[in-house]
Amino acid sequence: MTVTPTQPTASHFVDGAYLEDTAGAEIAVIYPATGARIATVHSATPAVLEAALTSAQRAQKDWAALSGRERGRVLTKAAELIRARNRSLSELETQDTGKPLQETLVADATSGADALEYFGGLAASLTGEHIPLGEDWVYTMRQPLGVCAGIGAWNYPTQIACWKAAPALACGNAMIFKPSEMTPLSALKVAEIMMEAGAPAGLFNVVQGLRDVGAALATDPRIAKVSLTGSVPTGKKVYAAAAAEMKHVTMELGGKSPLIIFDDADIDNAVGGAINGNFYSSGQVCSNGTRVFVHKDIKEAFLSRLSARLKGVVMGDPLDEAVNFGPMVSERQMEIVLGYIAKGQAEGARLVAGGNRVDRAGYFVAPTVFADVTDDMTIAREEIFGPVLSVLDFEDEAEVIARANATEFGLSAGVFTRDFARAHRVIAQLEAGSCFINSYNDAPVEAPFGGVKASGIGRENSKEAINHYSQVKSVYVRMGDVEAAF
Ligand code: NAD
Image (tube, rainbow, N blue to C red; front, side, top):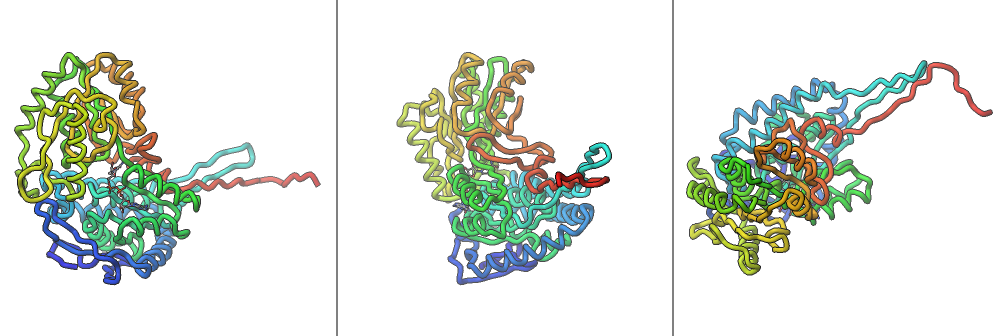
């Protein structure tokens, strides 16, 4: 592959070293801000996958035999190395994704480091229980699953690799990670850093490829668990494939989340929440609050503040730290988003801002706001995964809760109000896994993250993730004689 000093030196990272196999199909890596090819990787061949699986199986056994404290020390060291290299990792992430460096410096490698640090700290305290039963007793052991597969989306490549690897490795598993074919580079740097931090060769392997490589991992009997971050249609396929082998799964999928703004909300904060929940990473965030329900009495005030704040958008080369709004990850994603914008207009939504491709190199779509959106419109029902905010009117609390829940998705939800009793009452009734009160899209590693309904199964981050990367063995211990019928 073509390289710059900060880029990885081969397509895959397997058994502790970079690995190339040019027999695999070429995958072009494009800088979304210019459309220029910045690297080429090759899809994993069966030989690469075999090497990844064999080395991961071997490494997992040795790794699981270490104490939690020893495993934790490696993860903590990896976190330290990531933090020390944050700038170069962030620059690579920006080239891979097109997200502004202003964002990647604070939200990508740093978030990966947070996960490694958190689960590194937790590794030594993963214990079982002692359950007394009179004279007899039961004890439980929390054991690893084995070799886990991680399959990533393209919006947060470093973060996704670390959010999956950190709890998996803390629990004594190995991981084979397949990044999205759109953004294959940064996970390789994570693998390099894991080795440098002291992980055994093969413990965290990275293999490239399209859906066929993901599917090969999901169906291989040597994989004990599949953790996917991706769309709902992909999730259904991967979940079904995993079920055929009774594998464990974590599914972090898409959303069409409601953000409800009541008439007593602090409007500037609500507008800030709507901006964070629709335009950060140019809207390519799964948990985005893309259905913004605004009480009809404050709708025009909300729209005028939002329009004023949009004047603060700075578009340009995402590597320029002054830029705060980048392109779509690919030409295809840009076309998808523009298609939804056209549907919004055709179905009668009122375009308040944006609505167009930006006249410059790369795949920029202007931040777009629609008002007068109704529940039946395509832009209110389907995940767009771009900078398109839809404002829907409401008047009544019960009505807005019912409408917010009338979706197959259930990833996130947010409420802005000064009435805290109402905030808690409404949040409790919203069908979503990751919720916010007077805020939007915060994702600290300490908080469980994941969806309900079609948005997913399982949780990432927090102590919850441990339950999804380990299994409990119970052992009954009889202290006296065994009674038997004959
Ligand atoms: P995608 O579903 O197209 O692809 C996700 C990954 O799955 C890629 O690595 C892809 O190669 C792989 N894949 C595709 N088909 C497969 C198959 N049949 N078997 C195995 N692997 C397969 O998603 P995307 O376009 O990369 O990402 C955008 C989607 O991801 C959005 O729907 C977004 O909401 C979701 N997402 C969810 C979260 C979350 O945590 N809930 C986070 C980020 C993105």
